[in-house]
Image (cartoon, rainbow, N blue to C red; front, side):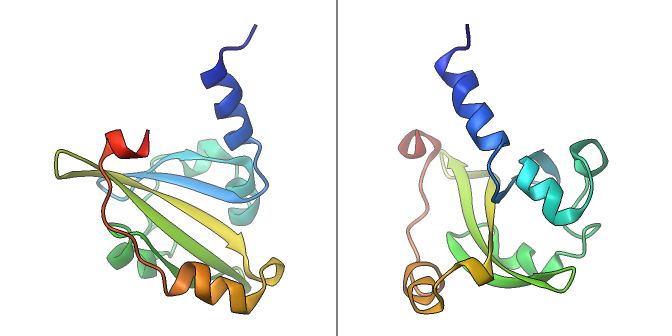
Length: 127
C-alpha cells in the first residue's frame, strides 16, 4: 500500500504540466512527465542538466524570486512560474511550473502570475 507521500509524488510526477525542480546550481533534480514531454526527452537525459544546457538562461535571473515569465520552448509559448525554496535565509533551489500559454486566459494570466509577487518563504512555511 502506498503512503500519502508516495501518492502525492505520483500525482506530481504524472501531471500534464511541466514541473521542474532545480538545485542551487541550476541543475535539474526532478522533472514531471509533463516536463519531459515539453523538452522531448526522458528524465534520465535531463536530470542534472543545467538551465544553460537547456537554453533556458532567461530563467536564471528569476529563479530566486516568486514570479513568472514568458518562455518559448521549441516554438511553443509557456508561462514559467518560479517558486524558490529557502531555509534559514539560505537558497536551496527552485520549483518551476511550465504552463502552456494557449491554455490560459491571457487577462487572468497577467493578473495572477505576471504582476503578483510574493515574499520569499522558508521551507517550513511551504510545508
